[in-house]
Image (cartoon, rainbow, N blue to C red; front, side, top):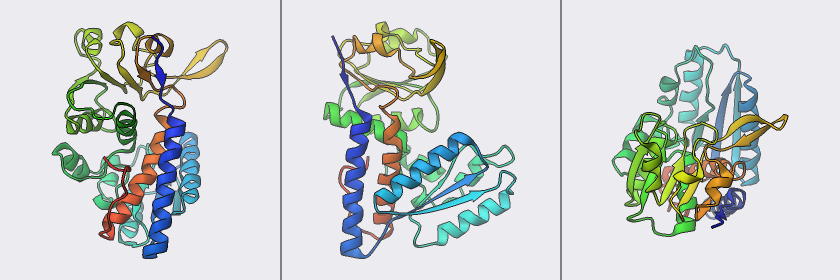
Length: 296
C-alpha cells in the first residue's frame, strides 16, 4: 500500500483564501478590518522568523498587523501593561504573545492576562476549560489544523479509533478534546504508556506529537490508517541537517492510507489557522456570523 500524501501547503493556501474572502466581505459590508497583534519579547532567531511569517500572511489576507517587539529584559509589569492596552483596543481582535518567553517572565501569567475572546492561540485557561467541556472556545491553532485536514480527508470521524501520541497542553490534550467532540474513541498515549506499539496499532487515526524524531515505525501503523505527524525535528543525516517528523515517513507511508509529510504537512496549517482564529474572534466581537469552514 502506498499512502495518500496530505498536502498541508495546499490545504493551508485554501484556508488562507477563505480567510481573505471573509476579510474582504467584512470590509465591504461592515467596514471592519480584523486586526492581529503579535508580541515578541527578546531576539530568539526562530521566533523572529515565525513572527515575520505571521505578519506577512496577515497582511496578505487583508488584515491589520500590529507588531510589538520588546527587549529581552522587559519587566513582567511592562509586558502585562502592554497586554492590558491591547485588550482595550477595539482595532485589535487577536493577541498572540510569541513563546517561549525569557526565563524571568511567567508564561502562564502572561497568557492568562490576554482577554479570552482575543486569545487566538487558544491557550488562556478559560478557553482550555471551554474546549474541555465542549463549549465554544478559541481552539489552539495546530490541533485545529489537524482536525481540518482529518475532516477533509475522512469526512465524518464518528466512531473511529484515534490515538494521540503526546500530552502537551499545546497539541496533545486539545487534539484529544477535538477528536472526542467528533465522537471518536480517543486514547492519549505517552512515554510511559505500556505496550505503546500495540496501542497505536489499533488506531484508525494516529496523531503523533511527542517531539521525538522518527519514533513511530511503520509496523505500529494499522493498514489504511490516517497518520497526522505534528513533529518537526532537526537531525543530522548524510552530513547535513534535515527535518523529520515523529513518524518514520517511508515505513509508515508504506502501510498507512494517508499521511502528512514533514515538512509540508501540519506546519503550514498553524499560521493559516491563526488567521482563521483572528477572523473568528473579530466576528464574535461584533456579533456577526462566523466564517464557515474555519472553526472547530
